[in-house]
Image (cartoon, rainbow, N blue to C red; front, side):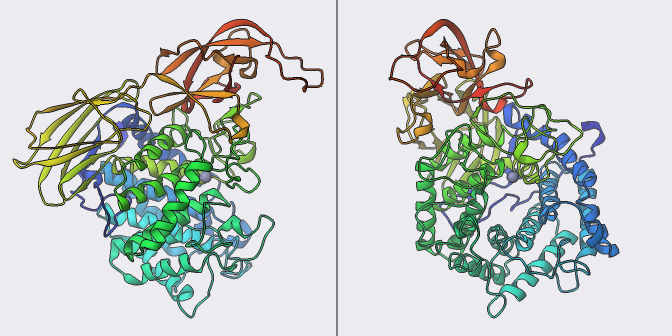
Length: 636
Ligand SMILES: [Zn+2]
């Protein structure tokens, strides 16, 4: 496939990164300054660029979501429109993925496709900047007649984020002009004295702040601040799920924890952090950080996934984390990374890298199939019944999706994965005035400028997380001391840097020399993990993790057609390394499927010992239908 693409050297792009705060403890690296050179993430990024982006484009054409814009221009959209009310946003997220990919590789074919799509979208935009294929045209409901469910501002949010990606990768083009017209329209209509409401689905908030950062236009920041402050006062209608569903129950400054629809709550949190950082509002920043930390402590799955409820795609109560009914939408994983990354930039707390890493490996990387042509929408931690193989030629209803599917009726997740993978380099490292912080141990080359202007460079050589050896080679340095800070994951008990014990953050402050090697050892041997007893749904079970990877048992690895619910794990037998997973000792239990399943507490009758092979959770369902579980009941 690569041969079909023409690549031109991209210009050096000082601002090419997903989040560019004006202030904060740490500064993210432009995509030009860091290049994934091999290993797991480089391969995922390659497949994303060569397969998944085109796959999403193909499906968006096929299901008519791109043609909706054509029909809007032709005046036929009221009769012919396809897709849900927010389908425009998926076209915008696709363009954002393309924009980061063009910025990363200089792919001319994708660049031309962006121009083609922007030309069409521009034609569909109305004279005053309004842009949506679902509302406002003859035969359709009026503009902004359903702010709770209409997603008009949500669609602008993704349009604006696509434009910001375009602008930051050196293209001040038609797409950017469209997004600015739309943003100006939003400020005109929803500003002071305008419609005093918010969108049922947040995302315009972080988008407007990012557009302010990319253009310097202050009114976009002011509008985002208005949206953040307006929410939580019963602005939107009370609904079946309550106003908490769209975070309109409590002002964001007063909330204790994230609640309601997970993706909405997390996008809003990202926007509130952006507003807080740009307006130096520490009270708001502290409030959102507190809510996110509480959410990590009480409402987050082992995988980093968020959202326990299918019915309203919402967080559950504290510790309500059933593995079989986990929703863990892929988009919530992406959104949680957006929040954690922003908090880390603002506060300088490198431990947020732990949750970013956990969520990248166990949610974002779990979604796409190995070939990049099918995706998980939900990411449960336990599958009781083998799922059906999705037809590669058919749209899946998301709730019934069994194995990874090529496309969904609601298809927010595939393009969210695509834009994240295309911009992934931007999440690996940061700089401060006198230091470089390495957050993720991916094989990469970094060449960047510290805040004080000194040039430094680093090459990261590793097969992590397959093994835990990481060699850092200094490739550029100053003749004065600077600090290299290395995140040591919380699970990495016994980690060393150049032989010295390391925890939390290893900080090396010295005059480095070109060619100097730093050796990091992260013990990735398989380990048992137990849950807080208040996570009732997994009491009496353990999980196995290996480095940052959550492992799972899958029935295709069990002998004699056993299913995962028929096996216990023997925690007295040491775990063995097995590829990039693990091997444990299991016991088969004899269940009685026909009688009353309750009785006096007794040990389950074990019949025989079996090898229990555990694979990375992200790889489950790659070998056809299976049963699967992360949390495994213990024997004895
Ligand atoms: Zn989604």
